[in-house]
Image 1 (cartoon, one colour):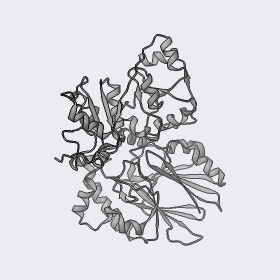
Image 2 (image 1 turned 45 degrees about the vertical axis):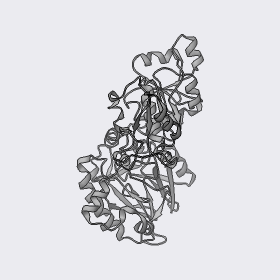
Image 3 (image 1 turned 30 degrees about the horizontal axis):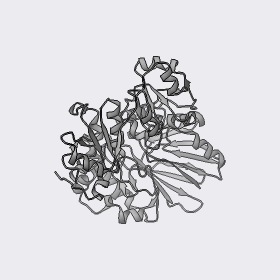
Image 4 (image 1 turned 60 degrees about the vertical axis):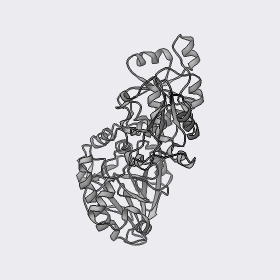
Length: 464
């Protein structure tokens, strides 16, 4: 048996190649949008991809199942409860998929979604008992799948299903069972998923707080409380995955001259500037969105630009195009027109407007000084964490506006007055700062290190 995990940093998505080298056949489980890596990995091991299996319909990223099926001729499999509209073969509780000497047994484990499954994988050359489990979004390292992404109204019912899936199904299995989940650290599909990318059932039984002995009612409260913000555009992403995603195909770089790009801007296209911050501060196009081309781009873009808006990229290096394109495509941003092939020096020579300055990164000590010594012009502190985080302690006087609500609450803020944005570590506040910068706020501060660093600095916390 051969297994390989593929992991997307930032989104925290894990997918898998499982194959029988003796027979030369393999399955890909939960493929993400960039499918070339599965083809290359299978080819390197002499494997033909014959099965594509989804553990559920994903809400945080767009699947690559239809693209991979088109390239390989493999069938797509998903549980019958998914109501998937694309061409697929339905899975049922107890089904066994044979891949040469490998057996993949389907265990229906609803909870994260109604159709969620776990795959118990056996190598019959060793034993009939399962060696490892691909648990999808049911069981994570140190966590379990959240039950609210189908809809808040369904969360309690799915939490009840999750209790059964965990305690009546998975936890009846042997402690030695290897667990490979569908997400790792960085994903919003759980509360606080661990950084390790695999575990054992026995270790989770002992140390996973979600698996502590609880009455059903207490478990439901635990599973539905203190959840992080929902993945941006999750309803749209889930709808795309249910109906069947347009195959992405090969990524072809699309350079645009400024003259070619301007008509798109006039029709409402957005300019996404992915250059380093210092370059953006020196000069940028008014109204452009600045998000650096790092592993958080997929998570941040949804808070700044609507997914139906055409996007033109401004890159530091044209070689970055494919990586940025895929970061956007993974979360359903398919309408990338291309990238500006000419620099801002040409933009300026053409008489088009440029501006300078940007959101200012400040340390908690600087924020504390501003609040104490601003002579009536102190910034309004906006905390973009979730309500449960805010209740645990926040900068005195900070106003709660969770990141997922911020774009709808901008009218509560004054464009002319300073705003300081803070979260737990400075990650979410950077996204919030980009949004306010794009909307024309005059003075925006991003608090580096967030509330965690504020606390470590010994500054006062307010709890209410």
